[in-house]
Image 1 (cartoon, rainbow, N blue to C red):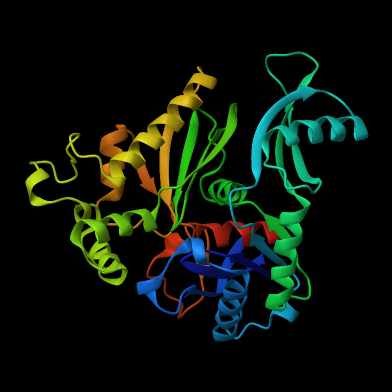
Image 2 (image 1 turned 60 degrees about the horizontal axis):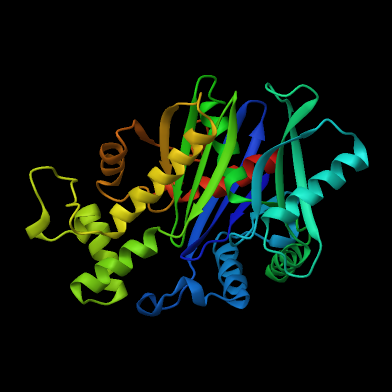
Length: 351
């Protein structure tokens, strides 16, 4: 069995998976809001003590003893993790490690502690003879130590695997859809505080970017436009979806159209998505996008999938994390998409 822990700003999520041959099964799941009072919710005010207490309560409600868990994978919090595909000389052993450490230092904000990295050799570069493609994941020792301490304080005897959200999402996508053999797929994971974009394909570069526009941003705009508190704005957002940030004066015959004259959090979101995808295409001129997969806690927002498809003129589908996973009788998921990262984490724990 494997436990995947997604430490979220709005909610933390846990998935418990079992594995028997080719059969993967959810045997337990749970989520818990990270706040005690939604009216005062602010993702930037979260502390380690709050996360620890929140996840301890969640595990207790699921009747899971953290000390008894042998396989656990958890998501690193924050954006101070670099994931980048690079081209480097085909070196061996220490030479390759030193070269990658030098490369990592270019991309992550250093905090005075040493670089911690992991890498996966993708294969020979198809353009330059004698060079290889490497997927590099790097952060700092300080951030790893902070995360390790939090996992221990929650009560886990074994701290397990520390993973980055884009890698967990990629593992989930590969498990459900396979690696795109033609072109590339795009994963858009919309959480509360941030949105993670991943683009990759079998013969295409791996790309990821984090946007600071997500569910919380939408709720804040609804709150400000309607002069209501956070709780009322969150309720209005869930009831009306993308319409919650529009007024009757700027709606036309298209259900999902937003007037260009009024910039909104959603139009800004589309602009950032478009910039990211254009950057990828500029760096990979032979690439083309097959399907955009939408997932994350905010993916279920009414009208959002159609709005993104219309604005980007692309095929957009929801990525169901349980597409190829059976679910134990009696378990229900009101919003399965919020578990995408935790499922990706749990899947890695079973490998």
